[in-house]
Image (cartoon, rainbow, N blue to C red; front, top):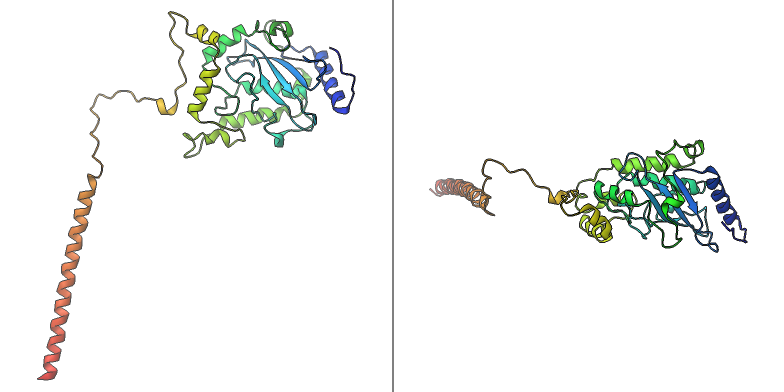
Length: 309
């Protein structure tokens, strides 16, 4: 790694963080400088989180640090197909440039790498840069991710971050990383958020937590467009059953019933009964009123006749 000659405070900060990460020799993440003349554009490589369809995978991406780093958050892109995030698209996370209000200058590259891995384990349907593929598709992508080679830096994932058995436990530095607890807690809150009335179909449930959302149909179309042919071939091989797609609320079907379904009532059929009863009541009230008026008139006439006679 050839360090840039200019040593402004933010460049010194970035170089120091990179040196610390390289000294740790973590089996969970790695950071590299793909372009020697641009210290603010970095590439990261992470292992998929344990207990998820990504755990066997290695994923490569890009971090674009702003000139104001560490006072502003980075742009985050995934480059390796993974089934959780779109590739070559700026993704929306609470530690990315989409949410400057949640960024903390005390966080650094270590926070970003651990945080990105944690976000893979939590679904956020409708968020910018998110896709929702089946677990089988994600596992197949994880299997082929080791030999995936970056077209920008020319390095293969297995060369940057070799996979040697199970992940080692988190180091003390990783466990004590400032802000990491906030990142994990935010993920848990997103997982527990339930859409309010009227939000299930409108997609507002995912926008509510601060991430920009799209409708369910748009998300499905985007998922299909971003699925590489290799993934489709791996899943939909000849003789194999097609993958089970995650059903949407609008496409769910009730099991057939043995009893015939009641025939639908024609629109407005209940209205005549109600109108007839109301008309009958009105006629009865009008008749009573007429009788009372006649009785009053007879009383008045009788009084007048008595006075005259």
